[in-house]
Amino acid sequence: MSEKKPALWLRIFSYLVYLYIYLPILILVIFSFNTQKMNIRWEGFTLKWYEVLFNDSNVILATRNTLIIAFVATFVATVVGTLAALALQRYRFPGYTMTETVLYIPVIIPEVVMGISLLAFFALINLQLGLTTITLSHIAFNIPFVTLVVRARLHGFDKSIEEAAMDLGANEWTTFKRVTLPTIMPGVLSGAMLAFTLSLDDYVITYFTAGPGATTLPLRVFSMVRFAVTPEVNALSTLWVLTVFIILLTSQIIQKRQAQN
Amino acid sequence: MADVQTSKVKFSFSTQLRENPVAQGLALISPTFLYLLIFMILPMLLVAILSFMMRGSYGNIVYRFSIGNYTRLADTLYLRILAYSLGVGLATTIFTILIGYPLAYYIARAPTRQRSILLFLILVPFWTNFIIRIYAWIMILRTEGFLNTLLLNLGLINVPLDILYTPTAVLIGMAYEFLPFMVLPLYTSLEKIENAQLEAAADLGARPWRAFLRVTLPLSVPGMIAGSILVFIPAMGMFVVPDLMGGAKTILVGNLIRNQFLVSRDWPFGAAASMLLMILTLAFTLYYTRKAGFGGEELLI
View 1 (spheres, one colour):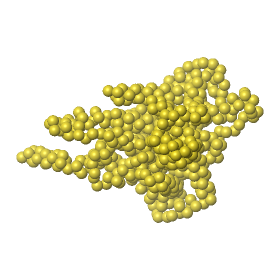
View 2 (cartoon, rainbow over the protein chains, first blue to last red; view 1 turned 120 degrees about the vertical axis):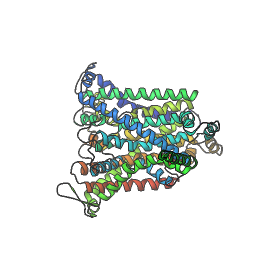
View 3 (cartoon, helix red, strand yellow; view 1 turned 180 degrees about the vertical axis):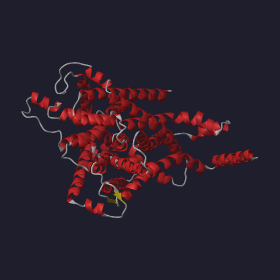
View 4 (cartoon, chains in turn blue, yellow; view 1 turned 30 degrees about the horizontal axis):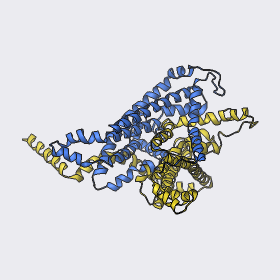
């Protein structure tokens, strides 16, 4: 599209939308430093709620669970999903169209349906709900997203570099390790990042597959928010937003650097 | 002797793999295929079967075929919930188009180096947890919240507005949650429009508004449809936003399904409701993707 100067009303409207997007988060952050417990009016600056948060054993346990699930699910989904992306981009095999369709299920089926399906399935095979069932479920919804992202990156991949490596005497494994993998790595990393954030963020599917023992951060936040407004949640949210922002910014910078090289 | 034979078998297996692209493809795809078969397809089939079973008196499942769950869904109570969910889903979709279209248009027309920053800024808040985003709106909308305090202090109202725990609050929360799903596909299709096409329209005497209606708008329809699918489907099944922002008054299909599985423990009925939701969303997706003339591939990329 052209770079013609946009109309004034369009510019103002867009700024207002950005305000709409950021204002709630800004308020959240500001009120995490508020002395007043009911969080209605600004009364003074404090770091008390961060202290409360760091001493909240439930939150700490939930954070630990969330990270374990996210790391395991991301690792498995990234490996498996990348293989699938390679298969779909490069090969034709029986069941090709069917696999492609299956990969779109998490996009076109509401999460709640996936949640109850997994709940019913784990009940049927008598698998006790807990960290294992959550992780298994997260891997399931992450694989399709990793595959989609990696596949998009593979689209412009030049196969002749690989052939050149083979002609120079490299075997398949060396070619894969030295040529293919470094080339698709940015795609694999952004797939992994997407999987990690989806896993961190997931409430619905975790809710159905968690059982009574295992709590993740989103589940914990939900139960805190359900009954009362407390600045502790604001403190937790602020740290969360900050972490995500730093991760996203770093990955943007890394990608820019790579693009420049 | 036996060792030699196994190595021979291994050798021939690997040469076969090297020379047979179909086998290579199958080897690469099989982990994904098997995993999704076990943890996605089988569970969904199970729900389909479950929807034709009956509930026992203790919340157990009686394995006897019945279509009773589906006839029960035809009750006015459930039809009303369904209609209400459709309404909320459609309203959310329209709302996100109204907000998202001008924004996507603005980003698509921004100087190239600004575009990625503007898109990045839309995404950042949405990578944070979605319960947290709902909580932020609860803080703003509740009776003693930010909005009411502001309006009262400005003297615009005398009595605090009751927005939280109403359908309006649900709509605000949903639109906020799903806005990026609308903006991104819209941006992708708007960005693709060639400058030449707009110049041609201008050369032929079309005023900007007319050029917009005749050229830009039709060309952005695929993006709008992709965005609508990405917003409408999760909005239809959503139960967390109504739970937290709608109070007890707002029950959507998502809440109905959740309650059947976790509260009233009538799994077969909940399964039937899930099937209905799934069929509705699939029909919606198929209808619109066909209409726009594209496959699923363009949905996300």
